[in-house]
Image (cartoon, rainbow, N blue to C red; front, side):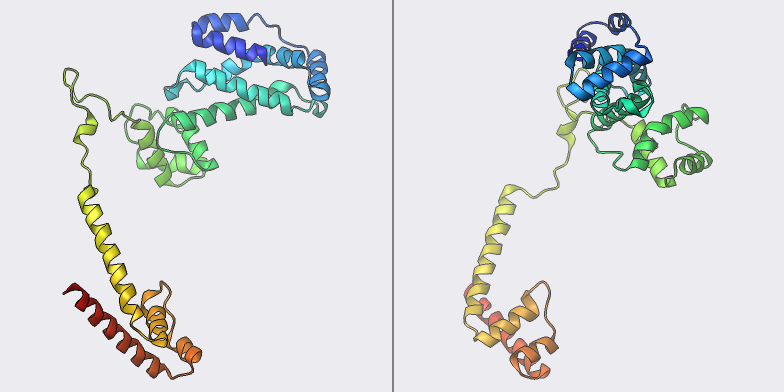
Length: 288
């Protein structure tokens, strides 16, 4: 653990070249050495064994992180996240399975780096499903294979090819291509280099002003009070029928109310109409 923390800090504070030179000083482990250290970690939680395993794989982390430089994020951050994935791999590694730690750890390293990129690359959430994540991290590579990196928008044929290759829809391919081609821009960015205005100054607020919102809220409160008083003037059966027929989100049928009150459906309808008219006249009178 200490090795990872120490050499991640070096990458942040100094140059990447110096960091890579430093981690090359750690020796690669033979299979027997790695097996012994992994057993010490598993059986005893040996921190020195953890440090030895991490140190010997820092180059692996850096090499994998280099493959993700095309997303505009600092390489030292990618390496740091990869080191976190490396430590997670060591905690879960089973030395008795018969394969080397690097084979197991590279999946954890990639997962940690990819998760960081997805959360940091854009303020808008992207890549929520496994297929979308696969599309996000493979679209650039596939465009390169199709020689479409500098060609602007993908042609319909290339869109179909990529969609088939990654098992996603053509709409998802075009949407992701547009997202990758249009990174986020700060609303605080100046309109001009020599100007004081910002982009956010030109945003139009479609919401009502506070006075309008307050007025509508007070009016709604007054209507609610008037309705409550008007309902209070009705008889119990009239009030229940009107509420269940016209005021509930899920109105009851005439049939269900006729069974409930032991009267015909036509009688329920008549009571509903009469009760509604009483409430209407009562509320009109309150406004005069």
